[in-house]
Length: 266
Image 1 (cartoon, rainbow, N blue to C red):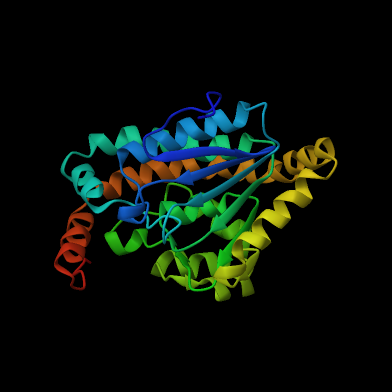
Image 2 (cartoon, rainbow, N blue to C red):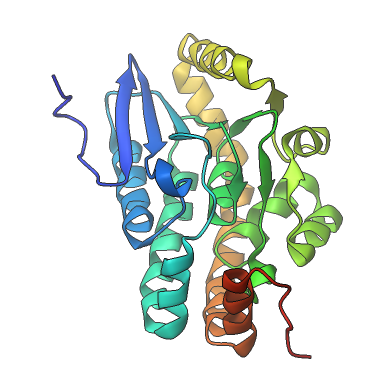
């Protein structure tokens, strides 16, 4: 029987395992690429998780082979054709990030496959990340002529330091899960067949702990991150919105569709 306490969302499946709330991005045929519906559903799912009295830990993962392959190309193309559509999405992006930072319960990422663009941002704003061997993570906004303004400029530097963050954000390079774990971008890289054991074992450890102390510790350690996020996101969204309207962005989309290298302007 369905759990009637959980919202019914078109692109996100919510389920419970005791006091663990599981949020599964559920567009497996498109590698959980983010379209308008998934983007809006993410904001609703995060708001629900924040106020959910039936859980103490939130686990985020993806259905199928990927965590999230980033922006859906058709959706990106529509935004480029009518940039006003992006302006709605920009406000929703801020809701997603700010709500994740306001959720006091621990958030664990089960990165079962590639996490790209917004998918990477979503994973990196989780508190602890377990990535499967073979998965890759990166933020290739610049490859589409876009500013990494929807969270990447906030969270990468907080996880791996300014120098490395600049390198990976300015090139859009994808990192293997092993490399990401070595530099501290993610917490753990484990064999795919051991991912569930590692993830659920860690969640059980949290659930068996002193939840009041755990939540308060998260709130405390998030204080500086929230300050940075609120300082950077407002400007970042404006800069990304301008880049959505650029010739370089149109060229990036065309090159991706035509499977060639982009020829950006100087």
